[in-house]
Image 1 (spheres, chains in turn green, red):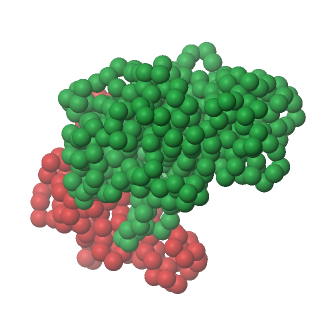
Image 2 (image 1 turned 135 degrees about the vertical axis):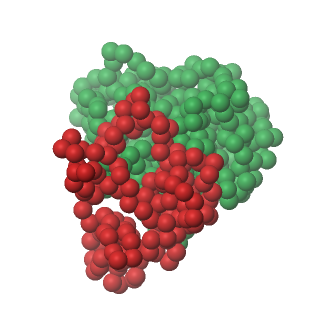
Image 3 (image 1 turned 30 degrees about the vertical axis):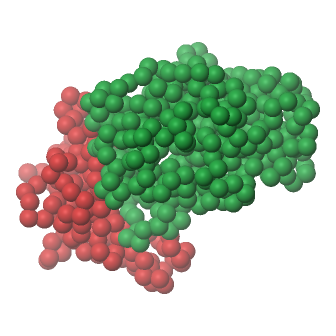
Length: 388
Length: 144
């Protein structure tokens, strides 16, 4: 893939009064343009994504193309993307494909969201499910993550202590990230003793919905030097959906024939397309909706084998100074989940690390290969490989 | 005693051998799904017939619900009265895994792989006094 990331921008994640999701998105785009030394009229196309406006209890706009009212009415091709938890990744997949097609040289991909407090309360009908499924209290994403990790712990010998270690690491990393929402470290004891929300997962092991935005400027790789002396190259972006036998959120039933998660397919495709092996990865951002998700996604992406996580995490290998630093910006646990922005935050953080601009949380040893993975409803995953 | 009604029609039924969940079986590839469906998610054909699921299986996984769900939940609890519930997937051999309420509230008394059986239980009482019932699974041989 011949696409470079030449500008990155983020609006801090958290809770912000008196500003709309669209305005958060516009700020992230301006930051990315500033980073690339560009102005909005230089942008030939844009893909933007946001979910909040379509969820219950929100008064936000999900029409990302309304960003032009903030950035300038330049008449460009602007496409709205609405693809569940892989929304931001999808903007990047389509933006990169458009550059690869030869249609345009320079574009912006942006994701933003602003969710109300508390868990997502989706309507069953919007997910193609019967009303009774919501009546009984099953329309709660956290139950899925808890049931998946409970089975995984049983099958592969992951301990409760390791669940706590993942969350503690991400809070610690978040404390070093000025853009993170949760910047207070918690001890493993505090995490294990916090309220049990969905066994085996306690309150401090979960991320929460919040607000935020992130954007990138991408261009044809051979033009990258026009905009930056530190280009990061997007070697692949792969989006996959659930197959027969996978275990997904909001599922009244599962097949007795067990299959694998869409993350497995997306990660394989991303590594293959990039010509990079999982062992080559120097820094990874993976979906940690809760600490169990980070553990399972490490193996689903091929970054380790099933069951290896217990020893890896106990030995500190996923810490910033470890063999495979994971969620260096604090992940979803410290940043929260504005769904449309979440995947773009991972790309932002990876580019920052590859440029050596991670500051207090910089991965040592000049990382050269980065990997990102998002996963979520309704059974979608998007993975990218980025290199220096 | 007032009237009783299920949380949804065509979800479960009473038979001389006890309650059964109503699923669908594909006439083309034999795949069983739950609840009723007009098409098969495996082969894509639309030749589904009603199929009563076996009432017993094993616990594939489980969790607890430790906070009161927001709408669309219609359980009877308030923030003050909510004490949580348990749920999981029960694997009905050769058929399907069903997501279900579990009657045992204490997760330390549940174990992956344990034998489970279908029961119909009270879910809530509507303002007109109608008792709304739902399906659930309980550990076999154990009390609920």
